[in-house]
Length: 210
Image (cartoon, rainbow, N blue to C red):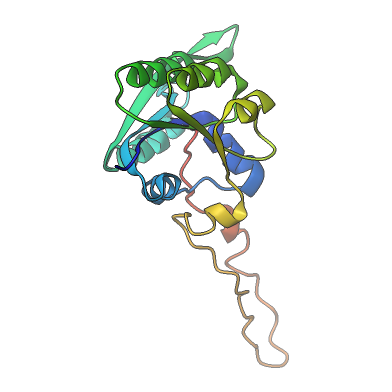
């Protein structure tokens, strides 16, 4: 009988780790989940993040809204959103970590999964992950080498390094490695300013961290 897998994604942690390590965050979540699950059976994926403030950051709110709509259309994936509170002008996440940890424990106690995969490098989840193991469940961590707590790696039954080889086929936007060939101009004709200067810096990568 196949193990039932539940995946818990720390959205902000994943987004910033992708940007820090690869300079992009346009991950195909359906394929990402499929690769993590392998030949086991997916119970459900849970994605956690904060909701952007439409008044303080209208552009970010619109971008996040479009991204979340895409996520919600992904089969067997639920989005759980916390809020942002401002303390002396500094944004502070509220309700994200505690919701993820509570869900992971509650669904384990209710025997809804056999394997929990935590997609995060945040050591604050170490106790919850250890508790999952104490229930008799298997606990796995999907992580980036430069963005992970040693406590998580020590606790995990299995570990999946999210390196270039693992992610190579999972990007939504395929980037060409072929350089543009410069067209020849007639002798004596003045060189015109390129109309594609800076084009590579304006690509529509989705903000997955919100």
